[in-house]
Length: 251
Image (cartoon, rainbow, N blue to C red; front, side, top):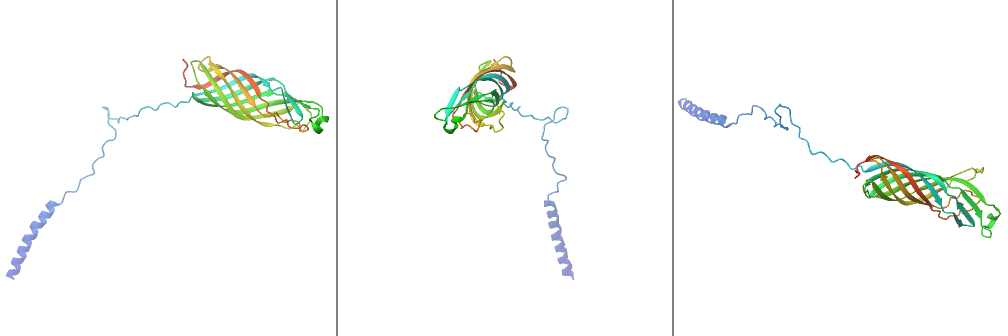
């Protein structure tokens, strides 16, 4: 019994220092999570100071304008094919344009024009076959043309010369003839031309140009054969334009 008490005392004496040493080596638990640093510096008044980036450059919107013009339509006097001679007449007309110039050499436009284009069909003796018994016929025709054109231009102070080319359709609308069987020809049309804009103000100016429309002769009366020949039309044009926006300053 005596040795048991002595052994128990020695064991207790050895465990007490070990427990105290273990408690000393355990790191204390953090009292609270560290606060996040402020993302924006504060001014003297205490309000957060917002950092701004460099202002973005304004997009170059180029030039957008609308224009209205008058022209004289000079058609090819006559073409011959398949035993028929088809003659056209000159007439005044009107042109509407919606144009956008993105940069000096990149631009485009939508154009619509309208003019009378009366035709005369005449069989050629000895070449017209069984159409020879038909007499000459005068047809009243009105042409409506639409096109999308590429425009290249360069501004020099108040003057901007330009060149254009594009593709569209010419629709012949017959009228004044009692026949109900007259057709409504739709002709693919090639457009080429050029001219210049003269600025009077930053918004308003004068547009002078020459346009060439190239398409085949319209086939109107099915009693006659289709001539099938190209009939270019020259259109010297004079009008005014109004610029909706203008980010190219005038000198």
